[in-house]
Image (cartoon, rainbow, N blue to C red; front, side):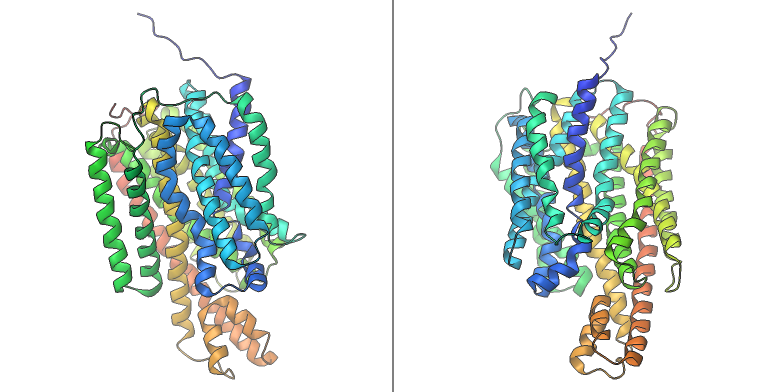
Length: 512
């Protein structure tokens, strides 16, 4: 009995992959591209502390909250159509952000960018699944896409540093515009439209519930990490969990659910989502801290820090290549767990950093981390997509990318807050000598504040202050690295158990 062989992709599909990878890269880059530009934005727009946090975080929050909705919408109206609409919105919002003249306008532009970004990620990934029917080619294509999307978080600070060497801070947004215009031109020719043939009616209430479940939970965890348990954080968490329960209940009862929650009953799907969330949680939070460490403690300019970060991209590329090469003959349990353990090893190497350590030690350690990230993300994304039925590709993609954005936003907020809390605790032990109350508060709040205060006091006092501040920030940096390693090692253990029965070189089956 003969079996049909899936058609292999041709040049049109591979060119279409290029057209899809670049916007996915930009969508993830915008989560971290402001790391380098933050000091200049603070100087020119003078945002309050709360406004500064919203400028940094609102893109990831809105994107995470809308990915599920946009994935489901793409299944219904057409994934290519939604992609092109999102590209136009993303380009327009980028221009608005680039020329923002007030903190409020920049916050609004970043929120609009989040809406556009939420259409790009699930649309690109679900289109890839339809373009590549051959398992090996699909695995390669997903690996390339994964390297771009997960690598974008690491590439963002690099691109930001290179641009800031010559241009104003808005240039980090302007680069999005020509890419989106190119996608609008070539997309209709290179990409075939695809949609769910029987999607049912769109459920606006489920869309609202999904957003109302995600955002309060992110808010609660972020503020819990910053300020500890307080009534507002607990209420937000309970509200988010309650709305999430209502959302799940509605999906179970719906004839045409926005998310097929039955997918989570498959251990391979749940484990892949968990591994993806853990790896982006840890790596995104560490990315922000590593860039800050290089520019403060090690004293590098944004341009020099960007150049030093370039080799870390190679780690992701090697990780993707290893995962793609070994997947046909190695159990997913072994490869995913190995990727998580490698990333944890990178974190433990980072935890050995000291104030006087050479920058190459940090980059080498971070490179080991990105190697594990490349391996884990490639396999986790592939498992998510191959578990879901083809007609639900958009929804499965949305779940996968929600886990990525959710993990990334939480990682930046939580790990960043832990490092900041450690810094403040170390600095609060003794008020820096020769400073009045206002300067002492500024210096003990952030390492950037200590650098600013050092420029206003005599050289001897400045030297003592910076010595303490750099030691305190390094302590927070290394403590956070140990926590990240522990999270990933626990994830490796759980993932190995959950995926153990999935054989090598086969497509896991999920509920249809």
